[in-house]
Length: 124
Image: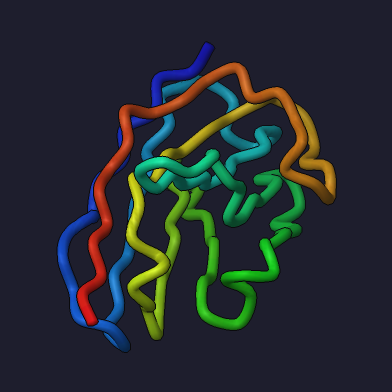
């Protein structure tokens, strides 16, 4: 398992932006599927974006594509989620997840490691 530490959540008005960070404490950052999920109160957890650190290939949910960008910074073993044009429906606890190996083009995937989550609140 990998220790993951998220940061960067907060409160913002609709149309605003936030950047989430997820630092992974592991020896081999170059072959990991890193993902962001979110869960709003009373709703199921949903995948938001993933990135395979070996190639930089990314995958997004339809609800965030074009507004959110996932990126990696290898020197810091960190993955970012840049969230622009935020909407009230983006309000949720956001979690970082990791699993060794390439990312599949789906969020129906078993991740072995999860962070503690960071809250994002978007007001209208």
